[in-house]
Length: 446
Image (cartoon, rainbow, N blue to C red; front, side, top):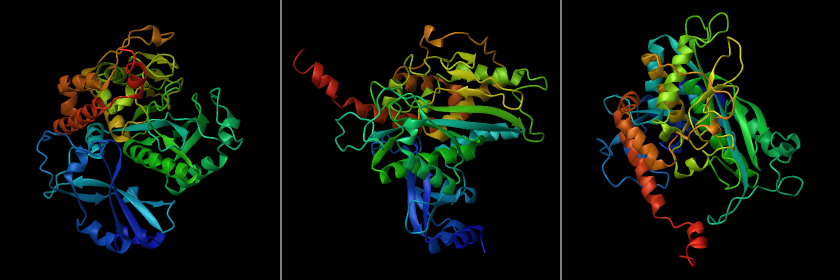
């Protein structure tokens, strides 16, 4: 009996969701009966059009042809390690995340999961294992079908909506006790290893920390977590949103990524020596983040809304200075001993595709190590007094990635061309929208 057949029989599964994360981190794929899935998995029987990777968040496609995509079939290869029971269906259902290849067996290089695997292969070639731990923020908002109406905090057990930004308020979290109990329960069923939950600064804003682990596994968990939270929220009559800035007068939502490297043979943290001092490798890694993160910003701030989050005094960075235990910088080094020495990349929004955000951060760090880039000295005090050096909008980020040849080569030229085409198409679609702000202040005044 194959591993797939054994897993399905053991868990009593009748349906299988075959998932592929697209450029925006949206779950694409097909649902198949479990009895057919085993044959499909073993005989490359499940296909999708390659164009799913150039579909925009609006469901459209770039007007121009992208690289050499002919919209032919790609073949799905389920990753047995990603199989999980899906707890919100009445019918016994599991999901599995798939890698994609062409007919000749070559990987589909524009697949976000493959982009991360491509970067990880560089580290594995050195005998190193990147370890990451995401911190993911999100908002609970009142359900509303009118997209012109601003988002509002939902009503909790008290019968009142939140106000006053109860950061780290325990009782504020308890307003939605049943919802979070179900999130923890569903995450346990999905093997999504969330650690702590806290109320963030915004009204209705929460943060969940993941246990640290191998980069691909954590990207899978983050992808599945976002889907899980949205499903639980809908069951409870509210929306959960991972938009970077869903409410204009509230803080934005981030996906902070803690990261370090360990020696695969010894398990030693390569970012600190035996005495607890920073290693050259650690400093070079930060040097790479400082130099290349602005060019990779499209991976961390992928949507037009993303750049509304990157403003001073809302716990979001505006530059790539680094500092120790400093939450105003883009690159924070928490106070830690030798085992836990790491750097926290604070640039990514919660709306970022976790595969691409993790891949982008590791790629920039890799370039720093290869080029032995000096990060300079950590800053003291507020980084908000320093210049805003990050892209301020989507076209700026697009242009920076176009100019970053060495970064594009590392991530894959085909991927970068496809990704930029998708984001240009989304920007063009956004530019056709006339906002309520324009109608309010320009309609009768100019």
